[in-house]
Amino acid sequence: MSRHEPWPLPLWIAHRGAGKLAPENTLAAFRVGASHGYRAFECDVKLSADGVPFLLHDSQLDRTTPARGVAGLQDWAELSRTDAGGWHSRGFAGEPIPSLALIARYVQRNGFALNIEIKPTPGQEQATGAAVGRACLQLWDSPEPLLLFSSFRPEALQGARETAPQIPRALLLDTLWPGWWEMAQALGCVAVVTNYRLMDAALIERLHGAGLRGLCYTVNDPAEAQRLLSLGIDGIITDAVDRFSPGAVGLYD
Ligand code: G3P
Ligand code: MG
Image 1: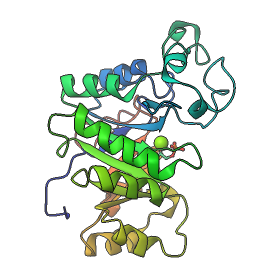
Image 2: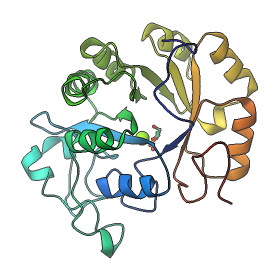
Image 3: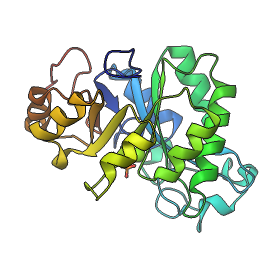
Image 4: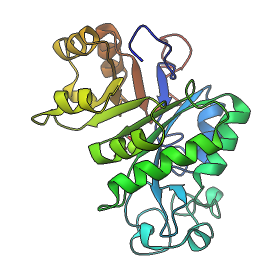
C-alpha cells in the first residue's frame, strides 16, 4: 500500500476512544467519540496471561482500575470482571475492560475504522503483535479497508506482519531515534505516526516523497491542529473530540 492506494482512516481519529471525556479504552469511550461524529478510533491493545487481546494503556492496572499489578499476568476471566470506569467518574462505574473482540463487533456494526496500537506488556512484543494480527483476521470479515496497526515497538509490528501481513502497519515515534527510517521501511510500514512536536514540513515531505503517510498524536490545541493541516498531515489523533469536528477540516471552536 502506498499513498496512491486506499487508506483505512479518515483525517480525525479519537484517541483511546474519546480521549478524556469518558474512561479511556472502554466501549463507553467509543460511544462518546461516536456521539461527537467520530468514525475512526485509536485504542491500546495487549494480551492477558491466557492470550486474549484486550484494551488497556498502561502495563499496570493501578491507574485506571481498582485492581493492582501487571495486567498481562492476569487471565481474561479476571480482567473482564475489572471495573475500568469508576476511576474516571461515578457515571461510568462498572464499565468493564473490553476485549478486542467486543470492540471489533462495535466498530464493524457501525462501519467505523480502527487504529489498533499494539501496546505489549514488556517482554511480550513479538507474541503480542502476532496474536493481535491473528485475532484481527478472525474478528474482521474484511480487515484491510478498516484497520491500521501501529506500535512504538518494532518487534510488535514484525509479529503482526507475520500473522496478518495484509493489515497495514505504522511505526509510532516519540523521538526520531537513529535508524527509524530504515526500520519503517524494513517493516513495510505504510505510515509513520509521530508525536505532533516532531512533525514539520521537512518530515512530511520526506514521508510523502517515499509514499508513506504521516499522522500525529495527541493533538488537542486548535492552533497546533491548524499548523498540521497546513502541512498536509494525513491523520490527527485527538482527545478533544468535543473541540474538533471530524467533518471536513472544521473545528468546533
Ligand atoms: O497511538 C498514538 C498514541 O496513543 C500513542 O501514545 O501513550 O497515548 O498510547 P499513547
Ligand atoms: Mg495509544
